[in-house]
Image 1 (cartoon, rainbow, N blue to C red):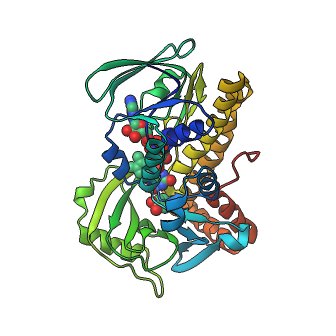
Image 2: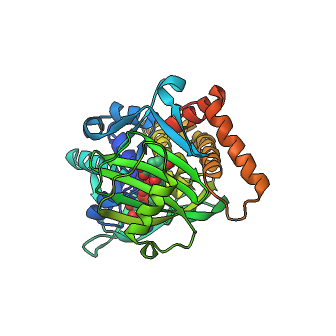
Image 3: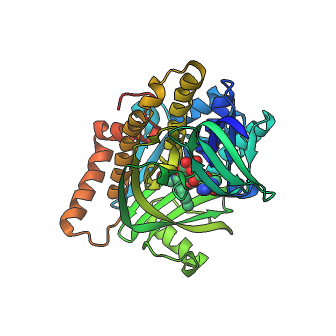
Length: 389
Ligand code: FAS
Ligand code: PHB
């Protein structure tokens, strides 16, 4: 087999890259270890930042998002028994759209298949060779047939647990947090139209949603938590307690999904080795407090698509040579913002009184200073793709 770009992974990064390349007449093959049904039902991110929304609209992927997505003009921070709204529209003149990652993935798969894209699910034994000379991806396809995909370049979009990152020699930065998130998806109508981030003495809680019928909620729990140890009643009681505010209550309902997500800040540098380019979670992970994970993956592949188009069409190497350094500036901005939001909103088990007072001072300043609130707002809604960071 031969193609121009071999893409490992059919998450948001791999699928969007394939779509962006196809729009410029560049062929790709996407290899995915899981089934189509699995990747389309995997519940993960929920917030599309403004540059992501604008990009999806610009490349013909926003029809269902614009119909079913929920535009939001702000969020609330809840602490000290009070509720403090951060008004994105007033502070930075733009907002976000709440639209589940699995919906973005469904839209991407549908678009690629409608365009005749080559997506191969349930592949196994993927290997990468010749990445500094003549790249070849070895794999066993869903029918058990061993195959070799010869490529001009390879995009490693296979997430944190993929194989691509190991093929890029470099430096790793890894910080793990002393807590995790227990997340639920509930068949319960949202009672509030915007997201609420709560810093409560018992721990962090997040109120989000997916549709007028489905609520998405998270609780800070110890890092080794087993979701089965939390009964539905215990989850609801703790959510009602941590998110409590005047005139605010949460509708309860049957759980559609329950799971624990670890929290870490991780970056692998560089994001390129020879003709192998990493994008998305294959290269970096952020704690989900800043809602950056999927958005950062999308920003990476926008940059990578532009670089590969120049390289494969005109043999212009300036884009591919600048790819890693340019992406990493945005990655570290998102790493800092996500670490800052996480540090400000969670209870740290070994937190002393001094640190707790610093945390409360940071929260109070963020909601009382227009300058501080604007800084949160511009990072949360997303700094423009291509901004000098
Ligand atoms: P992905 O991990 O989405 O996709 C990689 C794909 O590669 C997967 O489909 C995988 O099956 C495939 N793959 C792996 N190894 C392979 C191999 N050897 N061969 C072929 N295919 C292979 N972000 C937020 O912003 N908010 C959240 O609330 C949030 N919650 C999350 C919860 C969980 C449990 C996880 C794991 C992540 C969460 N994230 C969240 C982050 C998430 O949204 C990622 O940032 C996003 O999926 C990144 O997209 P990709 O880089 O495409 O990686
Ligand atoms: C979600 O809706 O899943 C969500 C929203 C905001 C976050 C993380 C997750 O910071």
